[in-house]
Image (cartoon, rainbow, N blue to C red; front, side, top):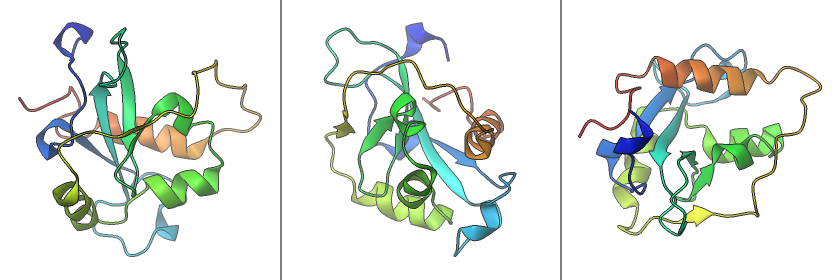
Length: 142
C-alpha cells in the first residue's frame, strides 16, 4: 500500500494485518498457542489525532490501544511480549470484537531516533518477517 492510499487507523478487523511470529525463537514461550501463532496485530495509517497526518505503523495491545512501532521497539522486551503478542487468532478476534468504534492511540511522547541496539532484537525480526508473509501484507483488504 502506498502512502497515498493511507487513512486514519481504525478498530475494524478488515483493516488490520495479523502477523505470525511462528519463526520467532521464543514463540514456544507464548501459551496457549494455535498452529500459526503467536501473532501481532498491525495497521499502517495515520494517528487520528495527528494534524500532520504522518504515516506510521501501529501495533495493537491487549488493552485495545494502538502504539506506534517506533515506541513499541523502545519498550522492554518483557513488556512488549506481555502486552502485544497474542497466542491464538481467537484471542485476537475476541479483542477486536470488543473494541469501541473510536481508536485509542498510546502517545508516550514525541518519537525519537531508536537507540542503537546492543544485541539483535529477535522479536523485531520475527515481526518484520511475519508481517511480510501475512495474507494481506500489502495493507487493507478494502
